[in-house]
Length: 224
Image 1: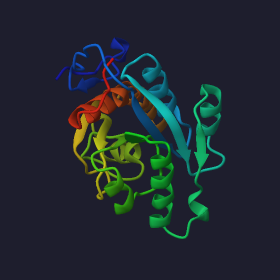
Image 2 (image 1 turned 120 degrees about the vertical axis):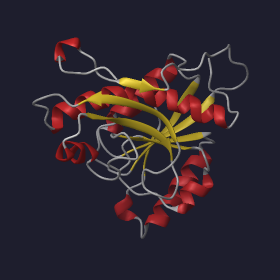
Image 3 (image 1 turned 135 degrees about the vertical axis):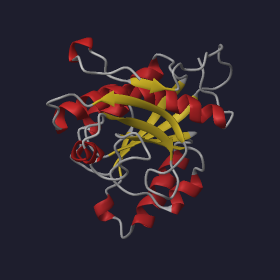
Image 4 (image 1 turned 60 degrees about the horizontal axis):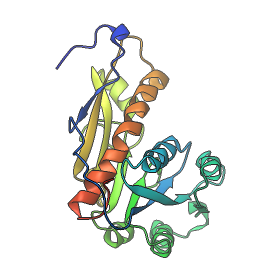
């Protein structure tokens, strides 16, 4: 693998799979996506814009947030995407929260659900309602640095390569089948903010591809 000693090369990272699959002309209906977010919502916006460019041939039909003050709600309003608040603080349990999520997604008739910065651990109820249809984006090269503050974990470990992973969701935290990864160099002088920013740029690139790959595994429409 090439070295990243010279930041002037402006190499953000390498992606696996190396090339997205070629997409023949699509036929029939478009893929319906829901996104779950808790914070800024930059991955939600990047995915929505990619879908509007038919990469993949899908529509983000619903954003669900659990934080009433999160910036993702403002992005949804600007982008014209329906947004629903399901505040976890008002739910008696994680299972009750996920039951409300399942109801919202079923009402919206979504094909796939994307967890884009959803800061809650999901339960069996949601996983079983959408088996192989839950995609998560995580800021590390899984299986390394699972869980909270993966960027901080990577910096503390002194690794030379960090990155991000889009994967299917199961009942274990950050442990589902890997769909796409992008490796990002840790440069001399990096802090949490600078490394996070470069990782996030790669998240924006690989998440649309992960949605397409997840859909292909299930024989769903996702190519345009």
